[in-house]
Image (tube, rainbow, N blue to C red; front, side):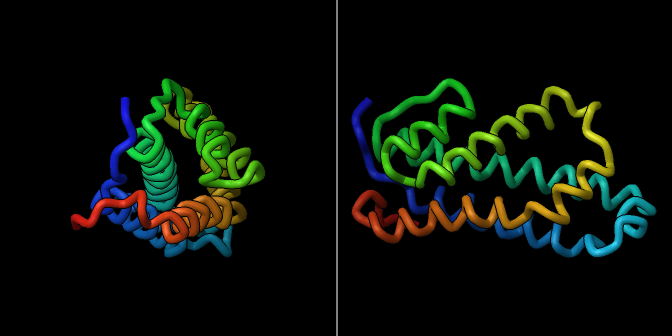
Length: 152
């Protein structure tokens, strides 16, 4: 593999996806556990939007690594390690992304273990973690615009 340009179209698409999914989660009744749990649609919306946000954040990281650094990864947790190694994000942010990768795997492979209460807790207290990862990507991409192509 040789480095190439990171596709601006992919970056914008994934960041937009993250923004839309976080917005959907924020529109849920997160200030009231009983209201959140009273309607099962809230739980399913939270689960779907959280999983999709994690997928988009990890997909963007994999794209940056593959295109910008010609680095392939075989696991989601490797994405965080490699992004830190290439100084796309700090060690603290990479640790957070690694935890998120583990949670993404749990959501996909052990979905039956995730409870409505757990989804409520995560969505009501940890959305800023998702935003922090998004901001890390944005900061790096702005500071390293030469890695991006010019196509939209």
